[in-house]
Amino acid sequence: MSNYKITANRNITSPYKDRVMKGDTKTYSFDYSAWAADNNDISSMTWTIKAGQATISDETLTSNVAQANISFPEEGRSLIQVTADTGTQVYVSYIDIASKDPEILTDDYGVCYG
Image (cartoon, rainbow, N blue to C red; front, top):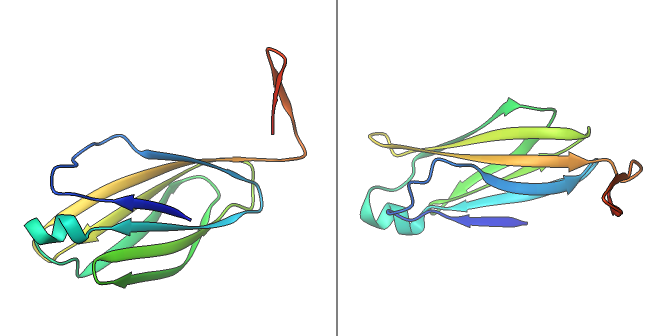
């Protein structure tokens, strides 16, 4: 599980990064509690695949904490957009996820990466 905490002063536009193996399913969680304390409660969440072969399932939003399972059936990179909406405010985050095939090893300067 990957947990991200969103605060009122975190306005970074660069995406969160993660690395998984082909065939994995991983739970991602965004906790907006601190952000909501300074703004408004999150009323809806949207998880969008902007690029890649990932699939999103089991999306939930409970007490300003959004969770979703993301599966990676193919090797490659996926960009996921996570949009929190209060009805009057929108907060957008991104996750850039690299999915590697464990059966294909890359040798880079004598170091094998799977």
